[in-house]
Image (tube, rainbow, N blue to C red; front, side, top):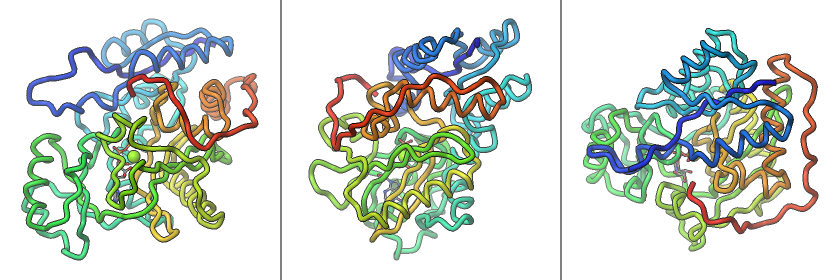
Length: 352
Ligand SMILES: Nc1ncnc2c1ncn2[C@@H]1O[C@H](COP(=O)(O)OP(=O)(O)OP(=O)(O)O)[C@@H](O)[C@H]1O
Ligand SMILES: [Mg+2]
């Protein structure tokens, strides 16, 4: 089959005047695109690299592929930017992997996502989306400490150590700075102390939990934030445990909450769902329906590897789920799961 891949690459010369240093954080490296393409080639497919934007549109119109594997994040700051490529593909009648435009838009808006997930019976942090600094005065003192995050971002854009605010007196200034840098509402949430958990899910009818993974800071810290500084230096700052050393009943609660969230948001084929676990109760933070697929550094890939899944198996399973949903093709010759899964990992030094 001819499979097109849609993606956005980080461009050279990362610093742009007036932009925060993380403005390209969600985009991919050529290594990721090549790694995904290589899996498809090994499965016997032809691959066309489509990219994103006007060049992608021209390629799609001139020489449409039979299927598109999508992980384009979209440029700019609009909360529907991840929905653009799937919307175009829907319009052209080209089947694609991953969630549809509505899911990709609603999940990028973390406040909207929390509303739907809470309606499905999953706990979420108390929070308020503010559009101007003075709106932050409405945040009740009982919520402190609070964490501030740009409302429509991923890859920890804007989430740094300074995003955790203990004192109401500092809230307005922190919110003002974030509003100035990220040009979108700021979500102020109660800071949920507890285990940092992410859950990998692949497939549909029924979706399959690849694994539950805990991100454990090397130095014990109740104020741990798995933010930008940590993710960029993850090899030195955290360990990963999959499965986490938590009671079976808590793991069941996490799995149930992750699957409920996946279904409530209409996710398809793949997602990574993030939680904090407070006194055994999973509290939903957000879902990533376009999770990073870097062959070494991305959380879903680390999680899958610890659960005994090779990279080929992970990418192959996502593709298989998408093709099945699109009624295209028989099952693929996907590698079996490895028997042995480790508790911690030792990864090659590459950038995220
Ligand atoms: N309400 C909260 N309470 C405690 N910690 C939080 C809260 N919200 C966010 N965090 C911390 O900040 C991290 C990043 O937040 P979040 O997952 O919302 O951002 P993201 O940029 O979308 O992440 P990703 O890199 O997974 O795309 C979380 O993993 C968690 O450590
Ligand atoms: Mg996250």
